[in-house]
Length: 452
Ligand code: GLC
Image (cartoon, rainbow, N blue to C red; front, side, top):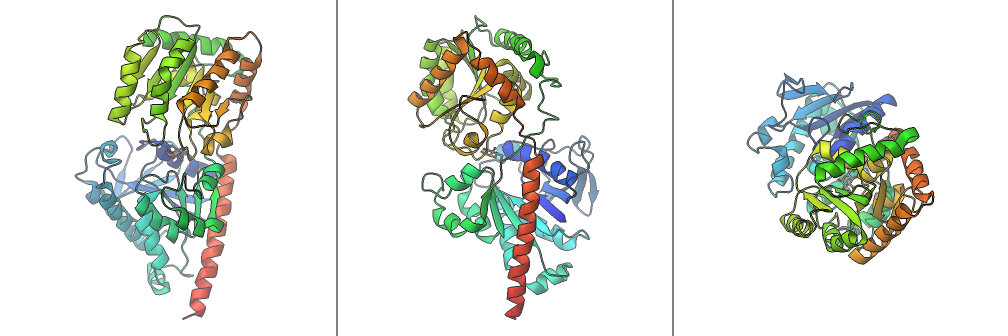
């Protein structure tokens, strides 16, 4: 089966958020299952041809995904030529125009390529116009592209419904199948609270909508091999390992004590999704309870200011580092005792899985993929209401477990470190979705032929 996997970013070549991690780690797992998978991303001007060993063939860049054998195509260099750094254009309105250009390049690429995908697997709103084109393409058009059976099946994966929702709407209406990045999010987006105005469309496509939980790449996320942290450790020596990393982190942050419950927050400071104002509104109470807090992330001026102001009042136990810093993120995963995830909604969330691998317990709002990956009281803490009080109460619960002399905290850490969120199982689910999409598009096609 030949699959073209299309996304706006793919780690390690280019990454702003979780979508990039998924596009960097799911395709290699699919290749291991025998899928002939190839990845296409935009050729942003800040992708360095030398670093990523890119060769050019008729205007298309060609390379491999990191140290894997998965082929990567870089498309539409001319469209993005004057956009500047990829990071800077994310979230701007102009993006829509550029991604329409990217979609045109995808269509052109499939038309001109000798390698014809059976399945087009697109991600998020970026691929909408391409999906729309495939849906409307006539049998003659697809035949002229070289499709013997005039068949190109499609799947769109929703990583987040809240960006460019009107464009994403087209993708939802056009793809053969749709999936969200967790079973809970797939259910939630059928409701007013989470559907971002697309309840009618999503409910109309309900039978074609499913949820597949993301995985993480344990080749990269492993405290035993992590070069960014000062002391490597595994399940057998987690207590000693985490203690050393905590000491190093506390020293780096300039905090006074190293026996407190150290809470980390890592991520985009997006008040719409990530609950950063819930966090800002809770910090005073967390600090008074005896916790230390470290925040790493950037993205929203109001949230940045709110966090900065409250941390400045408690420099001995609160620090807001308003930037993206890969090394520091790893040091927080390793050195913190717990990671707070107060998101309003979370399609999947990857940091809770990473934190668990590092023996850092997630304290999270019971929503979306957080609910599907964390077991309350077993490998983390979940709480129900989206507000600062519910969040503070959850931290209080964690605080009691952390400070009492019993074994519950340690047991939870060990069970978190054993949890398995590797891609293998989810990659198999994607293969099944590809097969279903193929089946579905074949049926649609034979029906339309009958009507000729
Ligand atoms: C988006 C979502 C996040 C998800 C990621 C990868 O960034 O907000 O929840 O984990 O995509 O699918």
